[in-house]
Length: 323
Image 1 (cartoon, rainbow, N blue to C red):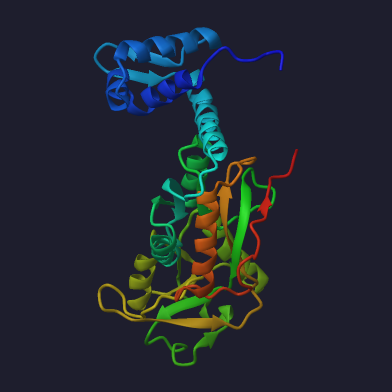
Image 2: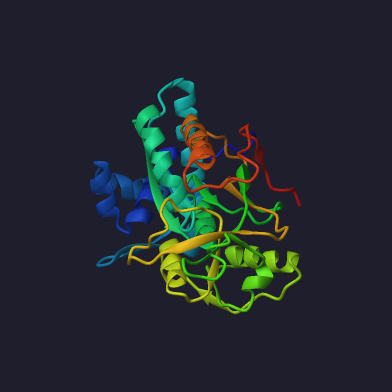
């Protein structure tokens, strides 16, 4: 405790606000403080750190310096922790406020609607703000400190993030309704391997798909990229190959009137985890705990979620391994 910092949370808050607005005047106006007061606070913070945090331009506002960019995620985390400490000391029982989350785009349409319905009934004052993105973008949102948690497929036990396991989902093959195997309702990967495979080609989802073919002892087929679940359904319904999915839609009819069918895969392919990831060391707030509980219920009872092993029953957080 010998080296206590000589700066305030207000100074950090003003710096983060100016960085986000890219303009001190705009940030000051939004926070109802004077531009002079905000500018002076940021300058005192820069003097304490010994390096500039913002580059100032008379006509173009401000940009964050390289040093400021490295410091900004830590500043945001400190501000979040301070807010959590304040809420804890006030012993607030109400689960309320905005919860900024990210969700893998292929998961969002199956998990978030039932989560919203649950929260509207049980915690109407809690307002999740959702960003849909791919796996790598979600990781960047966590690193930047702009989102408190993300819903994704955790791919690495030694990941840099803390993980709350939600469920394990088994894979299905999606084919057109008139596919030769659609009437049978099941197939092996070898039966489909000669057809084009449509999938998200980000490293995480693509890694899962390749792992399935490895487990079946088959080479991965030709891959055609798709960016959304509905694009996958529309492409497959047109007779253009097949897809590997982990969620069962409530209707086989696509937006353009096509039809798809899901096949149980007869191979022993294992499951894919679904989980919530947060920054390591983050203490889940009551808002986060309520959101996790809603996600578990959605993955257990949702019409589109064929959970293979069910959800984890506790809020156990797996933290990254210390290196």
